[in-house]
Length: 158
Image (tube, rainbow, N blue to C red; front, top):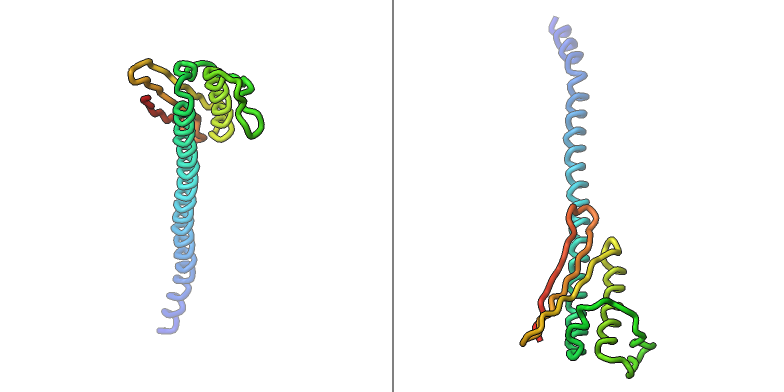
């Protein structure tokens, strides 16, 4: 009789290892899904940080353009236009400061729209006469996956 009891115990335990294996697979699957979600979040954050770095660099670039052409003043708050002030590797010498400002805005806006996500990035330069003259330079773009547009703004006092 003792043999009979051992056999019945073995028969009852046959399914236990299968259930344990299935539970382990479910736990492992949930862990892997969590790792995948973490990876996607880190990739999205990396893309957003690159866009923010571009925005900071663009605002710095416009600040340097304004410093290089200080007599244009309010012309930097105007509309961007290609005035032909840039020819090949040399700047044309017959441009007025206002024409150079319009060309700077044109080139700068094209660069912003080319490198920031959703190529309709909004750029603006606001001029307030002083002393000191104050320029507010802003870049706004739409980051994929973000409900609201992101922006970067800096003030430049000359």
